[in-house]
Amino acid sequence: MQVYLPDDLYALVKKRRLPASELLQDAVRAEVRRRQLLEEGDRYVAELMAEVGKPSTRQRAAAAAVVKKLGARSRRKAV
Image 1 (cartoon, helix red, strand yellow):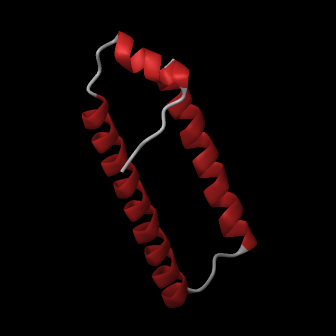
Image 2 (image 1 turned 60 degrees about the vertical axis):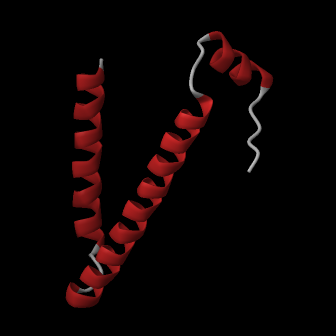
Image 3 (image 1 turned 180 degrees about the vertical axis):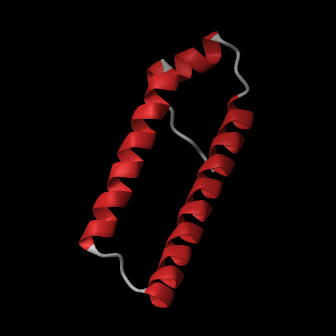
């Protein structure tokens, strides 16, 4: 397998003497895991909807408000 890095990124890796192969392996593992978790989440939601039905518009709005509130809280902690 060959991997292309843009010139600027290649220069940074070389300048900092980073282990490119190890970084790539870690990044690929993380991405594969992220996609697995997304697929598992999608399956869970599908099973839940099959069991209890689709959420109402009101329920979706309430869930969106919670997500927005949690996102704002997370951003405040990051600063």
